[in-house]
Image 1 (cartoon, rainbow, N blue to C red):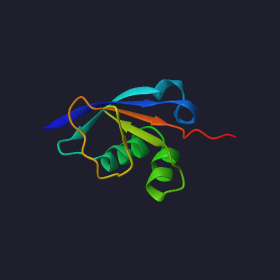
Image 2: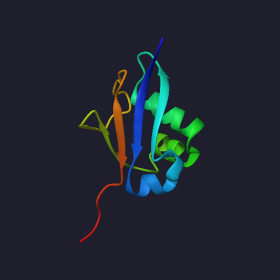
Image 3: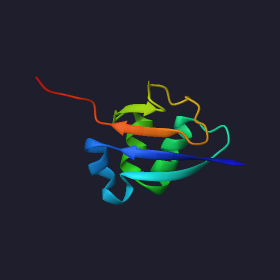
Amino acid sequence: MSIKVTVIFLHRAGELVGDKHRITKLELPDNATLKDLVITIRNKISKRIGEGILSGRLWFNIIVDGISVSYLNHPLRNGSRIVFLTPEMGG
């Protein structure tokens, strides 16, 4: 079995993946976690984003089903909506 999730890249994350992938649907194995999603992103959409998140070099606000998530072991479910946002900066 597998699950299907919707991934949305906003702001700088959207620029990194390009218009084609700003909103994309991905299929993942059952019991997938956010880490599984990031690995899939690395392999199918953007090596730079995937490797950056996994190594800690890139940091995004990640929202899963409306909840801010900071751990890659966060479980995903069929129909989950995951948003990658650039953290707000400024002064």
